Image 1 (cartoon, helix red, strand yellow):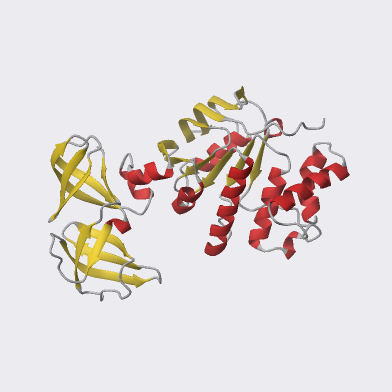
Image 2 (tube, helix red, strand yellow; image 1 turned 135 degrees about the vertical axis):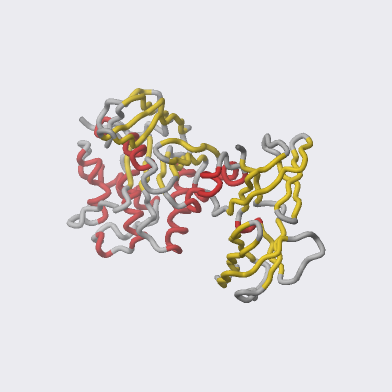
Length: 358
């Protein structure tokens, strides 16, 4: 049967989905929704359940409990072949004995599309992702970034309702990762694709996502926008995982409406209260939330000793030993690092500091 194309993006919904492998629970009572035409990232450390969740969307795994809906249709028991989704794998999985055009047109051919029409469809997608002129090359003749684009074109050629990415940039170097993730995001927005994207790289997730689902131990820890998760983490796990935060002890001195006066060692700062009450509190401070001074400033500051200092071109990274604990700070204001073992003073910036509820 020939597949019908041009359906447009679809929603994805999980309702209390569980996936078990014997006594091991890989996905535990997970519920979320992906709006049509948006990019949602499943983010978390290795073993948290994010890739199993993606495979459940694809139909490569079948849920033990719960419901999975795509475009409002219950697909929980449908196989991968019966779902209108395409997946881009970490390994690219290109056929080495086929050239680029043959790789990309393979899907439509399997669906029963005539060779000429399938090649026309493939050529359209190759032009779309900037690979025109490379149709006759073998995968081995392409760079890693070009191979990744071929894998994307092969997934796009079927014009799926949902496009899935499983750690798509993990085999690329840092500079190429940045460029390809920008390409993927631009493509998703231009074509209004519904995309579910898996990564363990928080910077990658922040850069490409409309919404991020943070997973931990087979469950959802928090769902939110990139800025929402970064500025208002729900708990210590999310605070620590998103944005390399230093978790420190503080004291809420007073609360007035939505603002709280908080003390960390010798420093006091006004922050969104987030439901906190006077008393002990945990704070998540991002690396850029610290200001590092070589001499004592006029304002109150935390006394520190430089344990490590690394010059990275655009900024200096510090590990600082203080009465408030070990702090990880980034200083983009100074060209020269404070010497290892020297004294330093730390104040807090207006942004990058958040109270952690509970």
